[in-house]
Length: 194
Ligand code: SF4
Ligand code: SF4
Image 1 (cartoon, rainbow, N blue to C red):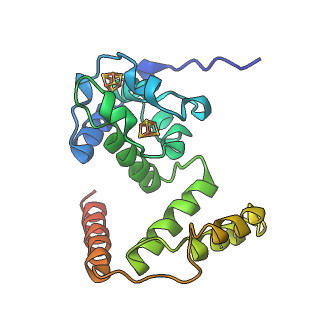
Image 2: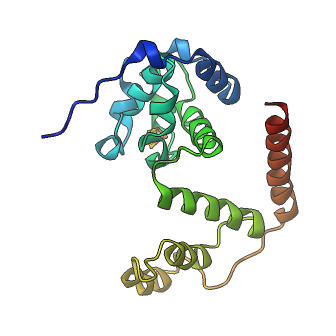
């Protein structure tokens, strides 16, 4: 039987967490009135530890540790269904992305394989301007110690030309790379100030 997790809300309340999420996502967390539309729209609720509407509530309650170590923020596919259906026009997807970045900064990522995939995905994007899947997937497999993970799918994806054997370099590659550099320099400045 699944165990019920009881949170000691008062002792773990962290108001600065709420302010930080609001500032970095540009969203007003207090506008959420728990209608549940976002959770009901999310295709991944079945694998989340907390449905996305509960993540919103936990932020309102200043539950930094629970939120930043949750599986939900890393299993979110950024599909934007929650954002589209929020009656308060809250960009929930942006909040989930903000939480992922905060979780990386705090070193509280609960799914290490997903963290590795996330970092390699962004590195590939920075290097090629678009993700080079044929290079990314074997690299991630090697690094997680499962080199033949999903290899049976390779003939299918190559036959269907879903992914290409060689990277394609897009026109605005330098500009995309510069976005990453600007973000890194902003992050370093933020660390220096804290
Ligand atoms: S953006 Fe994330 S949380 Fe929102 S519906 Fe999609 S998968 Fe779920
Ligand atoms: S859809 Fe919007 S208002 Fe409703 S629970 Fe989700 S974030 Fe809150």
